[in-house]
Image (cartoon, rainbow, N blue to C red):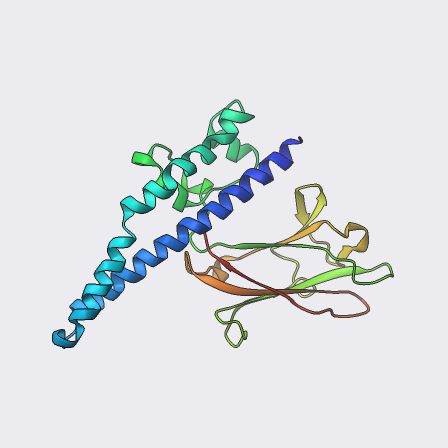
Length: 237
């Protein structure tokens, strides 16, 4: 199996595990905020029941529990390239292959056994989206892409929006298997159908760690603008 494909499989496994850790981490943070808000309330007689329930939720999502659930698996996955197919350090592997990992995974590894420089760790709130390039026309086409991210399923509150025909910055396409390069300003030729495109968020588009959002993306070419495809996902960086 080509190294680039192994790298991408590893990256995707790490990416999905980090999203699971992020969801638990957010639950813990939300429970703590609820406890703090109730404790600071001026009406303690009516807040007692809520406090007891909130403390119970907070204790459910302890750091120890999160670490015990994800620590061992995170450690094994982080070190998989080194133990499996890359004869060097994790830092060298990431640098050589232009890869990064989530701080969430480093946080749950036992006793902080794995540490990396900040340049090899995703910035908090960073996200990326991948989608297949679909055959939308029987004619030779040059495809561009639009993406929206919202806080609600109705997309009434758009948090980020990008159109590759307006600016190709942050957009990539899969020119060779699992090797992504910038989208041409004219668009992606339809000869790349069934390959993937990727959008990488800029710092102004970063979202809340662990929180779930609504995404939609659509293709367009010189003939038509096609329907959106919708999905939900959470942030694992």
